[in-house]
Length: 477
Ligand code: HEM
Image (cartoon, rainbow, N blue to C red; front, side):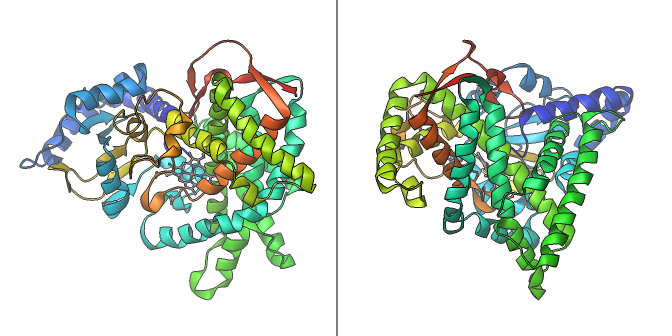
């Protein structure tokens, strides 16, 4: 998931600004001056860049211009490591693969994950995203085990079943690609977390998630009727539903499959116990991380294939070849079939690069850190800029061009980070790719799609996606 997409930042910022900050601005400025005086190391060099106006910093600049230009203008002016001040926080932005590696991998212990408290509360404070050290690594092992290729290969036919049910509902209709991809990615997330389709409970869980998502991406204003208040209520109900499900599974002794079984299994091992609330927070967090991200990428895949007819034709030929073999053998897709889709795989890789739906991530320095000749003071945010690395012409010539063939050669180390890097790297990357391949197999072999309306452009809600979620008309072949 974009653990820190752009728009929630704006929302968080705006709400604080309007409700809390204006009356307190004067006092804040005085305190800020004092704070900076006390906390800025005198003898060490901060990275170049501008901290902008007090409190506001460069936030308005970031959100009133194309974020890409904000980052790249500063990179041109100050280099690959520069300071700025956004959303009330001093930040260091980094856009070189080596520097990103230091923050995410080699010195990861010095840079902890950081989220606004409202978001942490909404996902669940015991979810692995928010932690470092022993608790994080215990959970990470369990989550990773549930999404390894050797585990998810057993889900191919279940995922294919979801696709076979979904695509006919699009026939001869104009659909909102993003919304439909969300439905799909949600259903896949549910089976990979619970190991089965929870038909009686699923609709309830789905609508609670929708509410949660609206609140997550809105201003954290806890007043009656606000999306935030509704989301917190939905979160409580979601927790109760999950607790009931966990209880049911424990009583029946049937843990099902998927992540829940692994987490319940860990609970049974005496040395590795997880409480019910730890299990619930992580289940909720993983579903949250799994579906909007994958849905946004899939929407981009459809957009790029639509706009690049020659690539679509080649992908369709690759998929039709597989379809012929399945027909002859009278069987559905297997894991091995999905390993024989090199061109479709490269289309997914190139989409992840071009769209870079997670433009950056956030960390916080846990102490004063010496960094490439500068100092990053304790408490400053550090943002590895994935999008800038993916759009750097030195690593990806003609970076704005959609060209899957560039992945015929592996990218240079540390230059391709759609799933992050290091201890917090995405454990769901193989599942995300698998579900995209399965959907593309059926879509390209059985249907055509045409964009409705000729608007190009990007909407940020919360991930960058094609404008209006890409309305498309789908017709059978
Ligand atoms: C195309 C879809 C996806 C993209 C682009 C994506 C991207 C990412 C990125 C960049 C991170 C690292 C964030 C950071 O370092 O701050 C991450 C973390 C994470 N992702 Fe994904 N993700 C996707 C799909 C999934 C799926 C399908 C799952 C679930 C199975 C998932 C579960 C997670 C979890 C649990 C984390 C947190 C890991 C940790 O903190 O150790 N993601 N994702």
